[in-house]
Length: 525
Ligand SMILES: [Zn+2]
Image 1 (cartoon, rainbow, N blue to C red):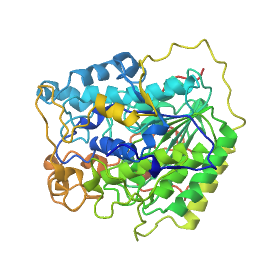
Image 2: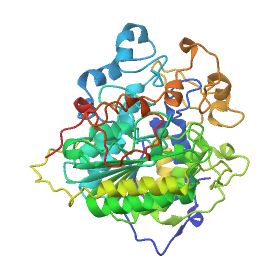
Image 3: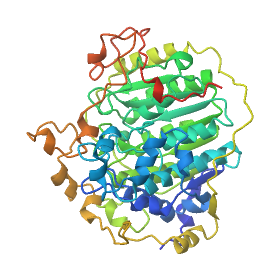
Image 4: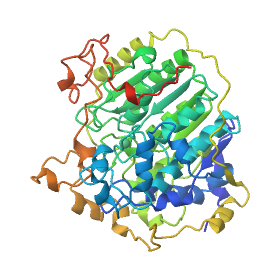
């Protein structure tokens, strides 16, 4: 079924040839957050299968990196937190109840403890770090890790389904060789963990496009622009429900063009969270694959070494569609709308097509609103006087991830399948037993069992359940955290407005400064 699919693809003559590498560890899709949890690593297997069946696999160098080591994870995260992640398991939760609270994990949070959690986080982190190492050495132009992009994780705390922040780790690796790294985030949620880590440095510029106002994580106000040496090097683009392809592009392109012009990054990290797509189970935007991938194509057009990562995405069949299509865009290859047969073909019922249509949801981003945020952001960017340069010191040794190259074209698919056969039903269990996921959970439509179990529809405020009975994912869905904003000398008295403030009615010159410096990275030189 997987052989002889090359006729499905067609190389676009207009696309400049880029060396694209792909990082995938087959085990990563076998982990399981628990019954009803919307984050399903299984989507990574579906994506991989679709990439295989379209034959895209043959056009990339494919790597299967080793998991990140404890020391690598501690380059950003605190030792005690990583130590805890190593020790914790569903069997010993009770003995760690105080620490569970400290690290924002377990019951009543959106970050459950599940079997193999430490292996999971080190697996996806190893892939991102490995991609960064390859980019640093000019061994690839574009590195793709769809299992990465977990942008909410903090130095000593899990958040929003994220335990370890592979993005921060990869950027730290890139900073060994790059004076300026640009981070772009098109997930529907604010890229708070990455922004916070680099809030006070000009060596990393973070640009996040996200839904803002009564939405997790509650941060990402347009007024949050960075602090100290990093002032004006954090960019937040607050958007409203129902944004469509044309509206999104009308903000994304001018903002990114200006950022490229003033910042001149030497490397880019692009987080492609697919929860900004139309019909996402937790998201509220109305982007099609075309609108989402246009951002990827636009970033690619700058021809700067780029690490492309996944992120959120909770309607799993659309996540697989999106990241497969974006892989084709990065390769400069056109693929047909008719989905090729693959191991998870029935998930794409009833249409079995690649592309999505916009819904008829109302677009709450009127032209005036978008024009206003665009002009405020372009105004802020005028404060950047020339791209910062840095005296590069003798370089720290590479993170060693012992890249094992799986294949480079040819019989890649068969080779990979032979080496790492893909099981139909996921099974990861330290005791050797098979942990079977209910198939209904993976369909994400009206057959989806989760919706009956979890009451986790967007907004979800219409139930009368006491807090103690609420399902653990509610935190991600409904309770924005505002603790990272509004606490500064410049923004005092405004903290109550953080969750609902649409950002446009305030003085563009007023910026807020975060008060979380203990979590930021010192990378000024
Ligand atoms: Zn998200």
